[in-house]
Figure (cartoon, one colour):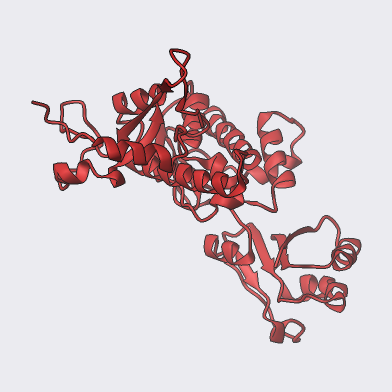
Length: 354
């Protein structure tokens, strides 16, 4: 007699239908049911219902929850629909494919199926469709180079960064993580490095010598590190938040997706919010922590053209010196942006939609 908490047939059918009869593995989307050539009425099924928490507490089981009964383990909430190939993969490698990851895959696949049904067709959905879904928490560590490409690439894929944050953004972040890892060991003489994927951010930490990646733009050599930072900062600045700080012992690099000034305020203390009532008041000096090399200056709502004309005064008289500033607004007019750019050299502006 089996000790496995197997799914009942109605549960399997419901899992398949809720996933749109498609594999839930990130990037797969394989259709798992269709006509068979055996007869006019035969159906070919290539999907399987997999357990999120292991169906049995065996020697090789890793996704174990001893608090769940057999009945709970066989409920639909503990199942995910996969194609045979990926189903066998996650069942035989429970250490790599975690509970948090599988739960995220399931949420994405069922939301995708719902949107496909509403649209009446299968299409690649934009990341806005999944923006409320947190990334599954994951951590990988390194003590040397050699496997960084595959380990970082697979971690980003398993965490569904491409689906939730966007494919171009995911690729830019992946490339930068690889280059920062190589730099930490190759030039920074790091002895250990970790990459932690959190619900709303990705953090790389290493114990190498201090390295501010933005300063790479002042170097003559344009290697992989230069091109990865250039892509991230200059082509994705409006959607990807990227910051660096050294806490005295370690380098910390933070990546996240931002869609509003509020996201920036939640992510970093290195920001200055300009209240409307204090915007032009004489004698006001805004302060920011000394460790903040890059500071985000958040404009008040409905930033007007006359405000744009006076921005050089704000920079010269009210902001701390020696910082790299990024100015953030909501629904800035094109004319306001043109005025600012004509009066402040090399200014960085993020303009979010209302």
